[in-house]
Image (cartoon, rainbow, N blue to C red; front, side, top):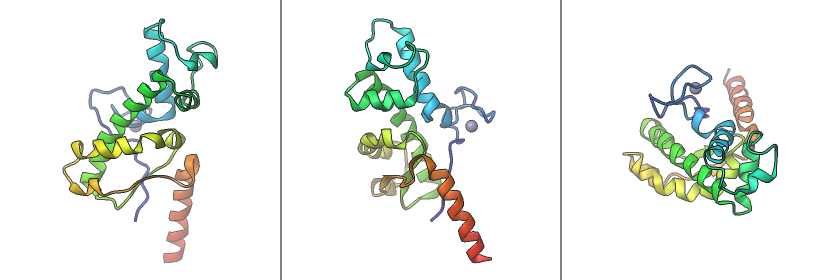
Length: 166
Ligand SMILES: [Zn+2]
């Protein structure tokens, strides 16, 4: 068992430069701000598109990932599109992790985990095309109990473990 916070693994060497300085980190594709930015870009690119997201915030400029999640829960097609793309990125990223580390379970935490939960089956179905390790077919994918606080909780657990072992 190990804890991972691997937002800074790249899935695209030509991708946008991440805040950490590397190109194409999963962070720039699948984080809350990335989800918000993609929704914003889709709405800005096509003004004829309707979305419940436009009801909140100041037009398309103040979109947050929470709005995308809320819109998807209400059946909004644009929000669904954005979250499905996020799953495409995550499948690629998780496939790399499975091939490298063979984890027993994938626990997805962070601020956007709960809004992606409805897509976990899809993520599981896409995984075999992104991983050469057949274990990806059996690996459970679950949402972190601590949600947005998962990173902090994992860090605290690691500290507690280090203390116990010392
Ligand atoms: Zn990064």
